[in-house]
Amino acid sequence: MKDTEIKKSVREGYARVAREKSSCCGPKDCDCSGTASARDVSRRIGYSEDEMNAVPEGANLGLGCGNPVALASLRTGETVLDLGSGAGFDCFLAAKQVGETGRVIGVDMTPEMIDKARGNAARGHYNNVEFRLGEIENLPAADNTADVIISNCVINLAPDKKRVFNEAFRVLKPGGRLMVSDIVLTQALPADVMASVQAYIGCVAGAAVKGDYLSAVKGAGFEDIKTIEESTFAAENIIADPAALAILESLKMTPERVRELASTIKSVRVQAVKPGR
Image 1 (tube, rainbow, N blue to C red):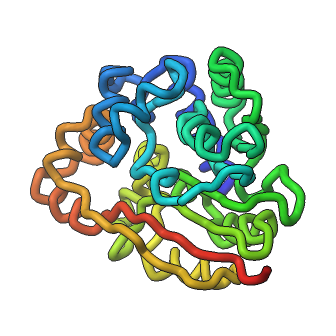
Image 2: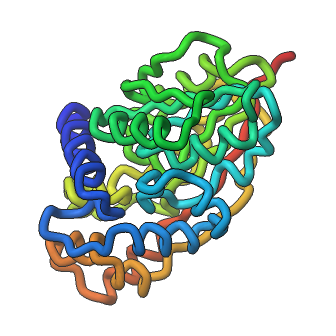
């Protein structure tokens, strides 16, 4: 697939999520359970009940693969930039940590998500949060803007990950911190999975091999790069997930092949620092 086709498919998939208030970004006929499913997903990947209850209703769509805010050690007065902010879940959590003197900027390329996030911000009276329409490969932010950049299961969707990290480096202040939760691979995916639009939107086909991912972070200029956490996807969870199941059925995968594929997929939390200061 061409980059433009990938972006179009991803944008359409997540626009559907925003409209349907669902945690499912799989095929249109996927049977997802909406809000309850979003809470279940968020609980499994590290969000507390207090965190889920603290944000406006509809902000948590259950689309992440970790909790970058919990690992970012945010401080009062800092400026935070969220790459792929969705309906604003992580932005609202960050806003509470940086306080009224801080600032949070969410960037997303899906107009429906931006509209949803802005509505959530208005209902929750988040005066220190704003949302901007744009691509994470071309961030709508000035150089040396942010103290911290966070992202949650979004960079894997970007066709040009090197450019994403170059942009993150540009926007961070000297001494600024990068903290992302993402999906990586231990080896390249089979050709049929890589060619699947549904699998790409479902975060799998767009994932990079871990070594290549970390090399892109280093190549952008970051230092002190660390993998803070890493976990393997359980095949049973993939099979039980309705969105993933629809993807697997479209690819005619056997349970044995699913388990083999699952063993190569990792959820990681990566942190790095822009040198300076």
